[in-house]
Image (cartoon, rainbow, N blue to C red):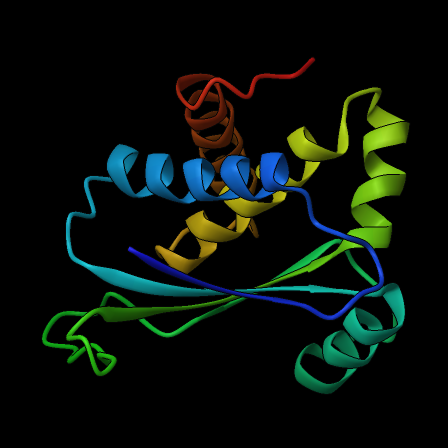
Length: 156
């Protein structure tokens, strides 16, 4: 797995947070039995930037915590985009660091755990999951919880 990261904020992303993000990505792939070499792009942005992206691509005029832009639909016969190393390009994850900080405080856990949670959530979107229906939401949240526990990043 190649994880391309881009921090477009003034906040320094610690090595501990990056280790948790990488572990969250790897454990999600393992949990979902996705054993292809892949590339994931992860950007850390401000509330202002995620608001603009949300408005531009989803027609939602508000900031959010995380956005996912999958490159695969997982439909029969689909040809995956590959990078120069032959890795499947899974897609892009965009996390608002400001929103992650707010939510970590709101939920009473650390920033590392919140960013890991948002990463797992977004990874599941990249792998074809959604939460538009109640049963989909329950399934996705169960998977998130199990993946974070396996990764050693449970709720604090």
